[in-house]
Length: 289
Image (cartoon, rainbow, N blue to C red):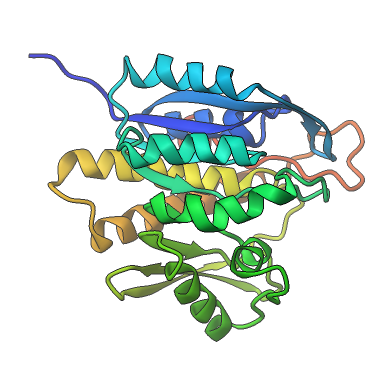
C-alpha cells in the first residue's frame, strides 16, 4: 500500500530575506503538515525594509514550471500570491479552469507594504474579471478588497462595511471571500468569511502589537491552503464548514506565529523594519499545534 502527504503548491514571487512569498509559503506548508511545491513568478529583491527591485520571469518559463510540477505531482490545494502581469494572470486562470490546481486560494497581492507596486496596472482588470471567478477562496486585506471592487472604492472602516464588500466581491465569482481586517486600527482584529452558499462567519483575535508583520498575508493564505489540503483528504467534500474550520485553524496558527516573534529584532537597522512572523512556532518553539 502506497501513501503520501497532502501536496500544496505556491505560485508566487521570492523573498530572499525569508519572511514572505515563496519562502514563507514553504515554511508554512511544512509547519501545517503538507509537502510544498512551487511555481516561481518573479525574483524579488526585498528585506524587512521593503522591496527594492522586481525581476519578472518569462511567462513561458513559468509555464514550464507548471508543466514540471503538475505532470508529476497530484496537487491537493494551491495558492497564488504575486502574479505581476496580465499574461501571468491568464496563465494561472487557464491552469485553474482546467482543474489542475485542486482547491485554489488567491491572495491578491498588488502593492507591497513599502508601497512598491507588485501588479501591473493593466493586470488589475484581469484579476477582477478573470482570476476571481476561478478561485475557490480569495483573501484580500482592506485596501486590496476596495481595489478589487473598483478604482474609487473606499476602504471599509466598519464591520458592516466589510460584510458589504465581501458580498460584493462574491458577486465577481469566487467560491468564498475572507476579508481580513488587519489593516484596521481597533484592538480586536475582525476577519469576515463569506461563502457563495450565503453563510457569513466572523473571526476575532486580539491585535498583536509588533513591528514584525512582514509576510502575514502570504503566511495566512498558505496556512489556509494547507489546512484545506489536510482536512480535504479526510472528508468527501470541501464545503463551508470545512473551509470555516480551515480558516479558523490558520488564523490561530498565525496568531501564535505573530506572538512568538513579537519581540524579535532581526534587522541590522531596526528603525522602520518589519520582521517576519515565527513560522516555526509549532515545530521549534513547542507551542501547541
